[in-house]
Image (tube, rainbow, N blue to C red):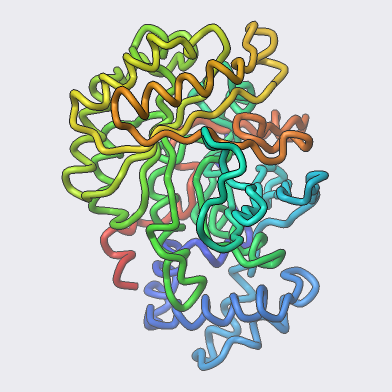
Length: 409
């Protein structure tokens, strides 16, 4: 296993920065000023993190003199950069290829929704407009590759190359904000967020902080294949943040066929963890269901799914996602579902079980940025592989900062 190291260190790694300030006997309150100043320089002024680094550091107000000397020596304003930016033909999607300090790459996707133009999700009544203003959502990555190995997903073919540290996750939002205002964030890009838990929590603490971007926790969604212990922990560690479970099957047998790691997380235990999370938070749960033609799209599957949720008292929304073609998935024999079956599946859940159900209208299929299509093919990336050990995350060389402490920084 190759251990990821950072030199200079990403300044948006909050646990690392707090430790650094303490070790140098500098009050941690200055972290707030550093971050507020960085957002102003990087996003509002649009300065370049490499070319304008000196101006960025000096432009942060009210720091101790020694910090103006220490920060440029030990930290970088941004440790990543956008090396490729590609827009869809309809203009509703922008894919960013983000290169990390060690040469690894991840992908992030900006998705634009305009309800007035009917560009949101397909409904059983075509042409029906949904309320609300036009908005942009960022789909970001939490790992380089993924260890979960879902057979229908392109990212799963990469294996796990490494965990992102908190800064590398947060910087994806910084890059996106430099393009346009982001209202929502979904952890549905590369990786299993709950297998990089501390970094994900730390990055979200920055996203919601009013001194930075001030996102509402209710506009952030963490999607998981189902790491049960972390689902339960989310309720207290990430209050107000939404949970989405990538279920994809109404029973354990079918789930094991398409999600091999599902063996460690049986469906009934996943639902029990979701129920525990819901009882504590009182929030809806989103259930992601990639629909594969001839595999999990039959009427009996819809009824079984409806029964699974209703008998467990789950209050949720099922999001049906027609499978998006990938090379690996095509080799497995997967195909997109028939539109009639898709609508029938939705109708059964709604009418027979009273479950809210949407059909996701995929954005960015023409640039391989739709659900399940994110993948990086790079010889350099393959050489930089890293296991799922937490040492791939940020601040591994320093003492750990408890998640609870992050709330008070």
